[in-house]
Length: 102
Length: 436
Image 1 (spheres, one colour):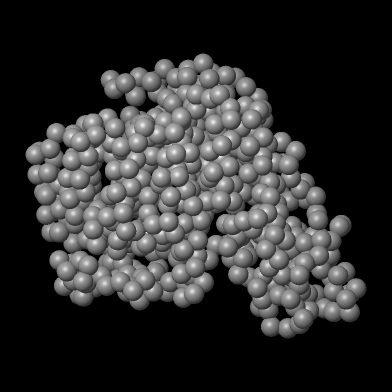
Image 2: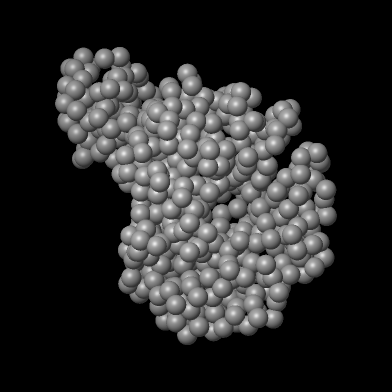
């Protein structure tokens, strides 16, 4: 199973991904660039565009949206795009997802 | 000194070197995808869903626009407004669109914007509103962000390959994310618009343009027309429709009986050429539907929008002949036209055609203009010069051979997917096309 954590472009997202991976007895493979192993990966909408995200998330079995505060994003557009991606995933039930309060 | 130059000196330059009234009073809002932009030259940005839930004015007054307003008030250049800065950098006398757009608002309102806190919320005066991207057509120069039929093409046949100059990524994505809500779901952006309309917009808007997709096929349109009629308003309602198959023109004209709408409809050529470029169009039906609108008391004015691209130039004068016939029959002010030159996708820009063909087409159009007495002389003259003189679509793409290669690559795939034939439709270009 492949899991993707979506959050802000800071080390906090990587740390949260490690915690989630450990909780699920799995591994954090880090930033999702090469997705070839089961486990946890992370990404932010600063790394890819929202249009790329639409197809990118198809590769994963489950998504985790990290509910980091707006202030933790240095770029408001990245925050808004993350919210839009969440709306899309939720409304169209694109993938199973969980909201992770931090 | 021109009127615009005088206006710029008097109204804009006395504020800051970068002020633009459109940043306060003008917006395009995409309710289906939760996006906005200040004018059509700006890139769009996402509207915060959480902000809109607590403040419907955040549909336009986003924190990103507020930052840009603050930049303008400091005399700085917001990055998204690059189109105007480029024009202004050509020469100190260049008049960019920010001058033209600011003129849409009164001197008093522009002064209010200038002296206000940039973080304050402003009510719109001109609004372009997209409810969703439902569209029955898939025009060659459109994309999946504006048409569900285009999205279907990408879904069924995959992305278009080998179109290197598609830097705006017209043909690379299904853009499912541009339709955030299922048709039966409550859309928080739509609800915010209605709240704002009831509270302020019915009073402050001078002009509301409804666009799509094809707005007359949107499930939102009938509720909207009822809502519009429920408030007393001076807002002029403009509907931008393709008047194509499945559009119930009779129902629309009946629903707008007491309004006096302006109908804007797109087409830039005739017959099989129009049906090739605007995939899904039935040209004869379009003619009938335009005439229905021109004959109806529900419609104040019909405007034909010409998105002039390379292929439309071959028979553009036939469409202009039709427009002249309509002007004679229904009155010259009842029907007007605007010719916008297509810049993106760059390989469908007029400059892709061979220079000798462009010269012939410019001469043909020039002859047409000298034989016809129309009010829209400026727009046609601009088109003539552009066709004859402009050798590449934008400064980013000066290698015309690359755009020609993409032209062929795209239309080869388009023909296969849409069951069309470029060479049968445009035999006069067949040899040139074959040699690319």
